[in-house]
Amino acid sequence: MKITKKEVEHVAKLGRLELSDQETDKLTSQLSNILTYVEKLNELDTKSIEPTAHILDIKNVMRDDVAMPSLPQEKALANAPDKAAGHYKVPKIIE
Amino acid sequence: MELFNLTIHELHGMLNKGETTSEAITESVLGRIKAVDGKVRSYITVTEEVARTQAKQADQAGKSGKAPSPVTGIPVAIKDNMCTEGVKTTCASRILGNFIPPYNATVVENLNKAGYVMPGKANMDEFAMGSSTENSGYFVTRNPWDLERIPGGSSGGSAAAVAAGECIAALGSDTGGSIRQPAACCGVVGLKPTYGRVSRFGLVAFASSLDQIGPITKDVTDAAIIMNLIGGHDPKDSTSADLAMPDFTSSLKKDVKGMTIGIPREYFIDGMDPEVDRSVRDAVKTLEGLGAKVVDVTLPHTGYAVATYYILATSEASSNLARYDGVKYGFRAEGAKDLLDMYMKSRSQGFGPEVKRRIMLGTYALSAGYYDAFYKKGQQVRTLIKRDFDEAFKSVDVIATPTAPTAAFKIGEKSEDPLQMYLSDIFTISVNLAGIPGISIPCGFTKSNLPIGLQLLGKHFDEAAIFRAAFAYEQATDHHKKRPKL
Image (cartoon, rainbow over all chains, first blue to last red; front, side):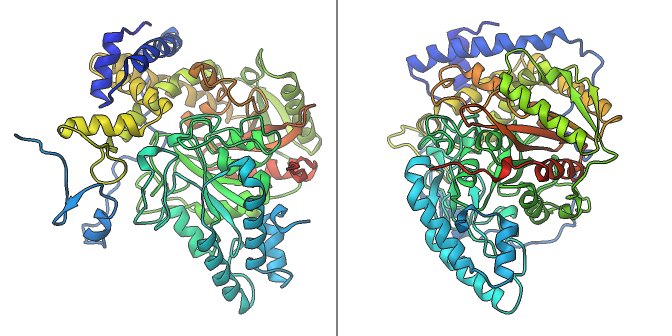
């Protein structure tokens, strides 16, 4: 299956990646190769097959609703690239 | 023999008899790192000071009698995708280049409680995406048996460090073969436990339905020792199984009488290295000689595993890696004009080419209009692959295969062709899709003295069976005693 350069640009936007022209060209050809290989799955008829999300027989795992120790604010902010007044700081969103 | 070349159980015995100290073992390992890591480059971070402090504590704890745990005072390297409180955890990515975790992964916490010594954080493919450790955002790790060759991946730093004596044992993680394939390439033992056996709390997520942590060691006994410590239920990981943990060291018996071992014909393919083929077939004969019954089995959907994996793993990765946005931790690019631009620039400058490729593939597979054709289709084929194993394990206890189709390849040989690189995981990937446990143990060497791995697979939560077969084989052979000359 071939993927077009335009599709690659669209997917990059969805994945929040900014690609150079060179990267876009390379990915267009590499992803086309990989998707062509992956097409072999269509040889299998899976209409009546249930999908497997993971192999454990567990669904929701609940615990009692009791307060447990959590990360203190100072530690939670310690790795932040930018912070102010106990908050994460990001570039302006609204003009 | 130098202390750094010994195993956990040998050193534990010496510590208990007062023949050595953790300080002596730790200095031996740190000295070895100084001597050879310039060539091998197993470590992203060497934690000398942490190791020396832990060694002193271990020696104090041992003074009142026996060392409290089999790993007390023993240096165990940690793959750099497991959180270590106060010690940089990069995942071999620039995007986490300055990340200092505020907590320990559960596996690290368990080793801490046992009084282990951490010599450092091991190199890997960025975000564990790769089969050669060439995708590290920092540098390439080299195979201690031949410095021109890859150590395997993604846990290449862990496997190389064990083989080179730069630690006594290591932890790795395995999403599609990332413990077993590097173990095979480096001539050491690597176990991927059953999905759910070991807590992943504090493991940087790659593909959540496949990731699993496990030991990389010099022999099977050491792997069982580490499993006893890291396995078991963890309330902090909702996917960890609430099942009793057996004592795996009690499965180590010298025979395999009464066991049935299955050989899947789909794993002996054209294009496999004839030396690998011969070694693995010889290993199966050895197991037969030790009392196992050997039968043919069939895993008919094996040929679809790589395609299934690269849909499911990349889809899950694209979702998991959405968290790297330059806000709460990790790298933030300079000069962004607004928030969206900050996300785009931080991610584009922070991730390497393989990670970007997988985010792209996964995002595409999950995008509107393609979900059913790719992700759902992949999950359905996954069901077929799992059923193959369920069916085969009705008549056998263990399945034996090669770990990889060839011994370690040359650095650069496959780095320009992602699909060729993906196909080097052809024998390990199905195991993650089926969620079963698998171990790789050394079963010989090629003419050019490169290690070859035998893979033994078991039923869900039956690590005991593969430990037993692996130990019996190991005791009948001496491949595990060889060390590379560096």
